[in-house]
Length: 346
Image (cartoon, rainbow, N blue to C red; front, side):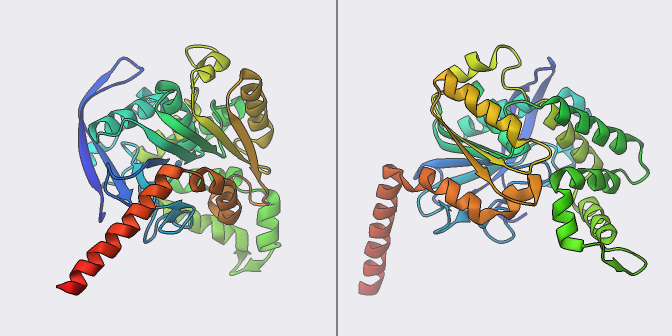
């Protein structure tokens, strides 16, 4: 993968009590070189990766020059969850997936940031699994984050999320076509009945319903870019999200100094808006600086990837009000003009 960088973490201690050594952490960054601008960390979702901006970036509608998360102002970093297979490193694949938790990944990401010399973050943002890891990171280092933006997720996996990850795990371990079949089930959680009905309207082509063709294509596409071990790990991590595992949610949240910008999807069937609103109310009662926004969409959980215009409007105040980033942008523009002037004279 072009522009994929790697660092080695000497020691990674897991909640299970196990310790891994010399683990590769791959990442990409977009915008100014690290150390020259405020840093935004983007955590990828279950089937995502570090390629969040630029060509084929899965969130390039939001991340890039003059986009909502403007890489003229911010350095955007995205790590790959170890074992997701994006770095094509066979040694980095994880088979004992049940040894790992979302908190382990959060701790690993902080180790990576430390090694990169990043001690403070302007923002941690992530959708779904990535947002759960963002919650975990804020709990681990509550004073190092200025803005926490969990999107289509929550600080814990509910019984509903746990139940569905169990079904996914059974499919992944028992099906003859595990990745494709698990994807068929997952899509029904990521979308809604209304979304599929509106798109296909019972259309029948080539001796099958159009929705069946579409689901089959999704399954095959995931087979082509995901290993079985990677999918098992990512699915398992979902049910381990619980930033208050060792204490009460209110007590842990009280330590978080970040402004918390919660973004839910009104039709989300996985991390439901109803449950997310309960988190918002609890945080408000807790005295946290917290804001609640809701994406309105027929598409369900995946709306955080589809309804990018709504999300951009929700996120804009967080990324447009930072005086330091504005100053950096002005300085950058000034330096560019000076450089152009020097080149013109030469």
